Image (cartoon, rainbow, N blue to C red; front, side, top):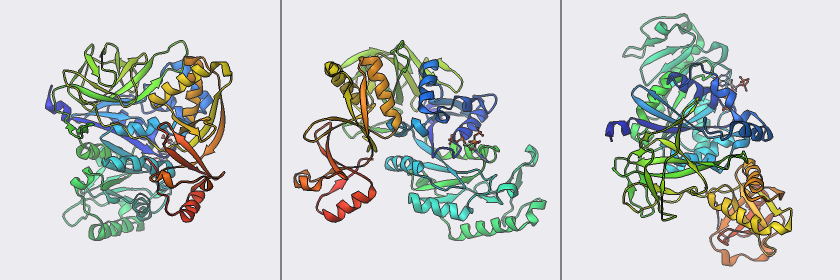
Amino acid sequence: MNKKDIESRRTFAIISHPDAGKTTMTEKLLYFGGAIRDAGTVKGKKTGKFATSDWMEIEKQRGISVTSSVMQFDYDGKRVNILDTPGHEDFSEDTYRTLMAVDAAVMMVDSAKGIEPQTIKLFQVCRMRGIPIFTFMNKMDRQGLEPLELMENLEEVLEIESYAMNWPIGMGKEFAGVIDRYNNRIERARAEENERFIALNEDGEPEVHDAFMDTSYYEQAMEDVMLLNEAGNEFDPERVAKGELTPVFFGSALANFGVQTFLETFLQFAPPPQPRELKSEEMKDPMDEDFSGFIFKIQANMDPRHRDRIAFVRIVSGQFERGMSVHVPRLNKNIKLAQTTQFLADDRETVDTALPGDIIGLYDTGNFQIGDTIIGGKGNYEFAPLPQFTPELFVKVSAKNVMKSKQFHKGIMQLVQEGAIQYYKTLYTEEVMLGAVGQLQFEVFEHRMRNEYNVEVQMQPIGSKVTRWIENEADVTDAMTGPRSMLVKDRYDNLVFLFENEFALRWFNDKYPDIRLYSLL
Ligand code: G4P
């Protein structure tokens, strides 16, 4: 096992609100990495563009849609792993969990819209982990918000400090390029490759003159940069590494402007595979010889003829070799990993070896659960559990045929344990409820109950809720509950309030200040 090979790995996810340009960016990155020949092949596979019902059809035709879940390519001596974080109807707890398996995140922002809701949630998960976050202000080829306004919006909404690595000169039709503060040059838009960069001298003046420099937006950009130099944050790689400062890049994924410079700078500052915490609170180091990893996602096959599933493993330490035997502490069982796949942009390939930072997919017939540790060698330890996420959508669920109630409960319990869905029940009547962060989870649940457990379920939507657990449960009384503040139990019998909306939560907080509520991530 080569230390240098491990250090060359960069494993990250792109987070964004739908339509900010994540797919377009991914395509461009894969294109630079030589993983696809023409930047247009990921697009056609994008599931987010379809309605959920179509998605099921697509899944059926394709078997398991894993090809775009993890993409790997080499660039500049680095081995790059990009993990997909689905948006739209595909948004689910898996999306959050994927962020548990990366060492850095790229945040795409639509410069006409600023920070949008889905980005905020994904950002918070990254923030909680303290991983570095790199921001790409996209769509500069269109008229958007003023760059200073965008930076302010970023800092205020996300409460993170920022450093502009480059600064746009004009916008939309007038977009002439960026002042690349980090590399001390101007990068021109729509320029021939050999005329793309204009170096800046010690005074920050360009060494070559060009017509765009006589315009007012060039003057404005130069003024802004001076202001940033004097009053803005300093670039500090250590604070970037801790996730305290986000480097910001302006560009256009579609026009392929600024993407390569971004990629190169990102690869320089994004961290190599990081140590990971064990249950014992010790850290597992990527350079440790023994193989270890954890399962962060399980994708079930939607095709009833193929029951197999794929368990996604993030390798933490050691070297994976096909055919190796691993120990699963939860099961106290050894399993031989004969059939494994690694994921590329265009194709699924069988993998023979893999290193820390890499993601492998294991064909699974029902052995694994989300959060499982797998280890090679003789050790016996487990990684700290993955966090549970606060669900926002709820349904009441029952078996259509009461005669099937045994399979119904068995199916639910297995799917809950696997992490596909969250289990709740009403207080006195003990009706079963399910919680999820995305609608798709319910549909996958329904589908799998039918195909794997042979149970038709009926689901009654309860809608979206603001979910809060309670520190001092003993102080809660029936009088505090009502249609807008429903009280239920989670799978561990903890009491949980489901509020109608944020307004109902605030009202409750004002009325019962002594009840201490909290949310999970
Ligand atoms: P997503 O994965 O984050 O949902 O976004 P995606 O890349 O699919 O981009 C959403 C839309 O924004 C697409 O247009 C895409 O072409 C466009 N887009 C992405 N980057 C840029 C950019 O830098 N500048 C401009 N002007 N547009 C950009 P669409 O019309 O929804 O899709 P399509 O019809 O082009 O496929």
